[in-house]
Image 1 (cartoon, helix red, strand yellow):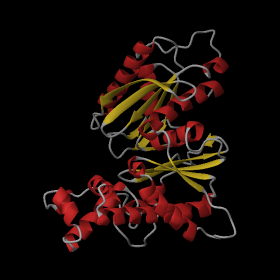
Image 2 (image 1 turned 90 degrees about the horizontal axis):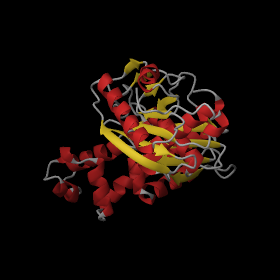
Image 3 (image 1 turned 180 degrees about the horizontal axis):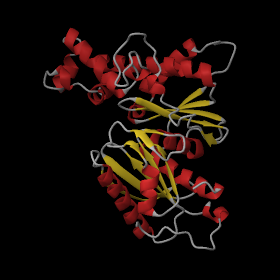
Image 4 (image 1 turned 135 degrees about the horizontal axis):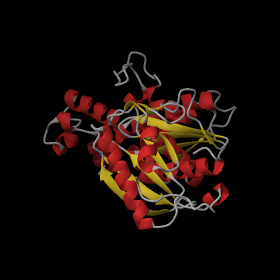
Length: 339
């Protein structure tokens, strides 16, 4: 069993709203945890490496982070919220599939409940990040929030009228697999032309490698950075070159931003959000990507000129959004009697 997280008998669900909770964010390389106050402040953190090929070892790492944080904190904690990269069922009980971890139709909530013996919220990490931005970040006060996480691919979450929306089967928010180019680039999902093949970190590296292969002179700076081996050009390499002023790198980032704006326009036609929050690793590039995205959105929004469009904002909570959101979601579940 993990550290003593039991609420004292005198603590009611309403009182629990005033207590810290533990948030866990599980990625392909690390299990990051934090003690999170009700106002979203992170009071303490801990982490372990993610043994992605072993289900039991990954759960061991989660329990170790919980133990460490609970012991250091000392006082009562509401429960444990766990956000992980993967597709969950509607209840959050089962991980249907995780691209970087060993979970396949895994009853994660049941397994962790046995190990931790505490109230739990379990779900997708992008959902948790979306909730954090709604509660504490760039989407505070909004009625309909679309979160887009730009990393190696594209994920996201949806909050409507103060409720996180998981979808009928639990896999809402996989924006990256909208098809924007019929018969376009092959995606890992098995389809062609998915949005994340044109507006993500992987897409940035892919396009840069194509240019380097076809026009080495135009990509001379990028090739110099990787010893002349075009296969080693990644999105990170392009981003660094853009920050140093390389014209091609800046152009490629603008292209990613343009594709981003097109996808936001498509989502806006369906969902009509107040705000679209852009998070994930690529979002740190800021206006280099967001400015062309806003420009494309303005030109591509259906009914433009006769209707308002969404505000496009950079996420405010950065890499900690997932654990902050997961902690608040378990607190909410306890207060509502759902944990």
